[in-house]
Image (cartoon, rainbow, N blue to C red; front, side):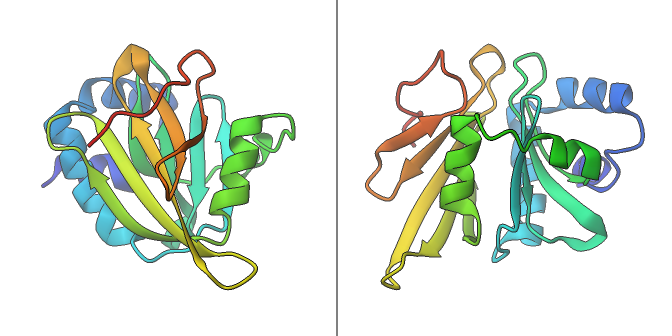
Length: 178
């Protein structure tokens, strides 16, 4: 599949061109292709850093060429792709007062990404992470991402299925069920 390669490999060239490409590209079949392509590159990786750049969640999985998983929850152009890390933007998301990003760091830093799935009929992506607690027991956290335009949101869900927190304060209800 050629189109996802365009998105995944060279997103940093021109921000306005990228936004236009992403705005027209995150339709359901295209998102499915991007998820399939990205899955092969990120499964089994450990989360090294978590940041927030505007309305985008950045997950540093220590990929080659300093690429990061970028999940844009911009309601005008939600997107999911690998991007070259912009260190300045990555570090700009270090504000301590953001509760959602703090909880993402608490639950995801050091966790291994074990599953990446997209709901077949919707633009919902589920990312499963595993980590260990102090007693050595396995804990699972799920980042559920809804890339559905005006209702774009992300939820952090624990292994029992309870919502820990959501990105958008306006939409705190449960994430879409698979």
